[in-house]
Amino acid sequence: MAHIFAFWESRAFYDSFMARSHDRLAASQFGTYKDQQVKLFEYRFDVKTGFEPRFTDSDLVRVALCRVHEERVEHFTLMQEKVWNPAMAGSPGMIRGMFAEAPEHEFMILSMWRSAAEHGKYRTERVERLALRAQTEADIAALTGDIVELEPSWIV
Image 1 (cartoon, rainbow, N blue to C red):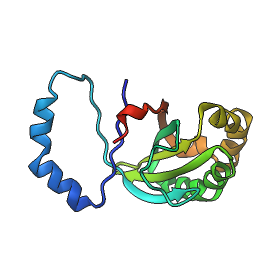
Image 2 (cartoon, rainbow, N blue to C red):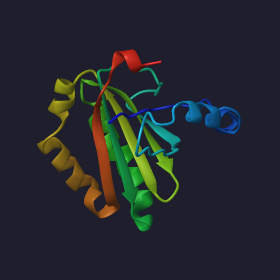
Image 3 (cartoon, rainbow, N blue to C red):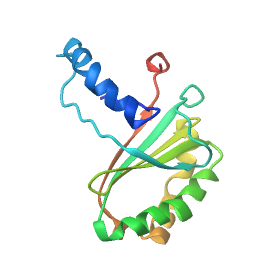
């Protein structure tokens, strides 16, 4: 499995690419992948510091995809800002991240870490305690995600 993250300067640049170049590139890659899923998220706020799509100082990315109950969206977003964001920002191995939103009450939390060992220090009982405090279980209808070890030769 591969995860590809693309960051666009603006929606206009993305729309222009889709209208002018996407189909040609997709046709040239036909048969090189299966079960592709694409989601477009809009940036909402940083996690820790000013997010920049630079992956050369990170060995690991944690991506969480959350579908949130409609009536809990405001609470979920507030808890990301007031509970999860400060906790992640306080973890020494966490470099930076972002919180983004898609239609249908879907959210992505992307965090960049120096290493798997540093990310491992953040997890376990600390995450459980934060989830209780933020009432995450009541907010989330579905949660998927992955821990992605970055391949330096794929970074462009």
